Amino acid sequence: MQLNNLNVAVTGKLETMTLQHCLTLLKIIHANPQSNVSQTTDCLIVGTIRKTMFEAPETERLKLARAYNVPIITEKEFLTLVIKALNHLKNNLQ
Figure 1: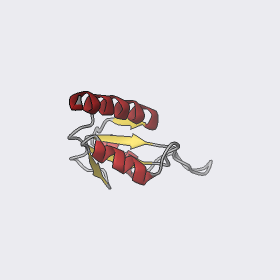
Figure 2: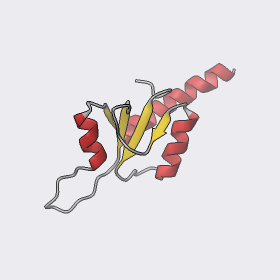
Figure 3: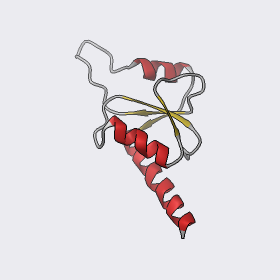
Figure 4: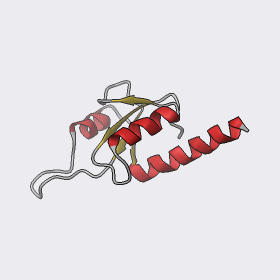
């Protein structure tokens, strides 16, 4: 999977970066950050979802992504895709 030109949303708390850093990385690799999940969303990045022991670890964005059959990736998978995209950009500059 490549994220360039895809509409990407984020949910949950990211462990390795702030949301703002994540959105900046998405822009650098030519993805289109979205604030909400919709039928135009191509991918959802999911960080840690903290709830009480009586609540399901779910967010509204996650529910919508499942309803729209949007691919869901972890923060680790996102970072792997970013590294590949940055290497590709770097190689194109040489």
